[in-house]
Length: 134
Image 1: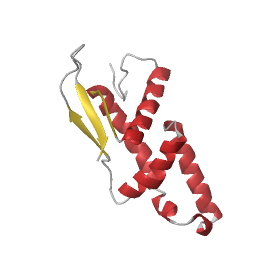
Image 2: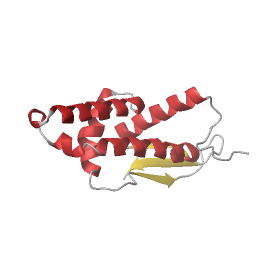
Image 3: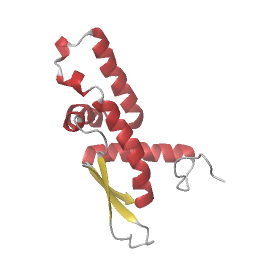
Image 4: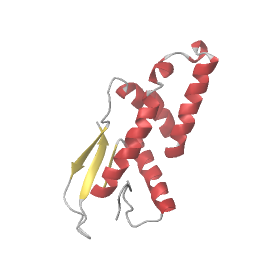
């Protein structure tokens, strides 16, 4: 029985799955829309929303000029960026996450992604979906 076991296995080892989610979150934040299978999209949403929420928590600090930030505020910004760097594998995408996406969604309570189901894949008839930032 699978009681109290969250997340999909997707036929991969845990290391492969973790790397795949990191790559997919990075691509989603970079391109703001990706096409993947429905199961991967549903699972990806968990990680993407958590990453965006972490960046939104310091959106008010990011709006403040660097010179006006206190030592504690600077430390909070660095800490938040390091936490995001666990999931996002590109420095350019981290900057985009904190300075564009976080400021765009700072008034939103949640639900930063949308999953749109599309036609099945031609080769193996897998259920496909588009996941995008709202």
